[in-house]
Length: 266
Image 1: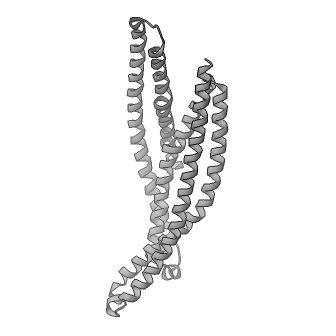
Image 2 (image 1 turned 90 degrees about the horizontal axis):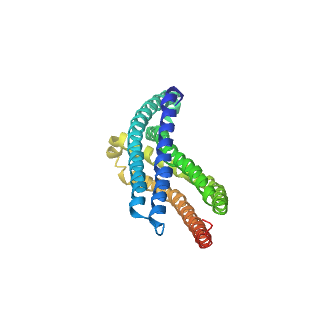
Image 3 (image 1 turned 180 degrees about the horizontal axis):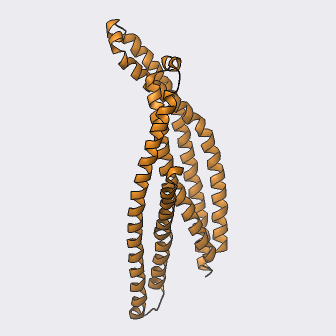
């Protein structure tokens, strides 16, 4: 990635600006429109000028967002393709350096699967970085800033919840990693076993080893099922916790906001 650092920082900057426009400024202008429309006794003719000004500002923000995201997407794709090419070359060179004994004692299919997963991991992680982490932190900062201006009580509830949420979810995710690693390991073994059988299919056919190979392969897949079950069910528990946690904070914040509105404090 360092070889393409200019593209990397350009992508971060463009997507950050796009998120600020889409997820912070546009909702704020929607709020201004709703404030004008909900004001009792407002003269429609007087209010219309302010409304049209806000509409044109929002149109401009959306146009700017579209242009920014197109440029960002072009840089994003070019950057990923370049880094993936570098990783493929790196992976090939590292594996090829091993001794002849190493290649004799390991499934060729496992090596192919591991190499593919190594390269694919970058694509997955970079997508998560741009589309999840950057979005999360930029929106988080924007929401907290807006809430602080609206109500310090609500902003305090929000930031306490965020800290608790990140802490607890991070704990669960770290526990889940060991299950993911075991699942990935067995997946590599299954792919390696398939490749090994297919590459030696003549021997399998010649020595009538079909049933033996089927039994052997079914043991690999059964172990894969057990490991996947642990990983997937644990992920389901994390999802349940997240949904309950979000439901609780939404309910609390909604109740507090209505209470403050009744008191004319928000």
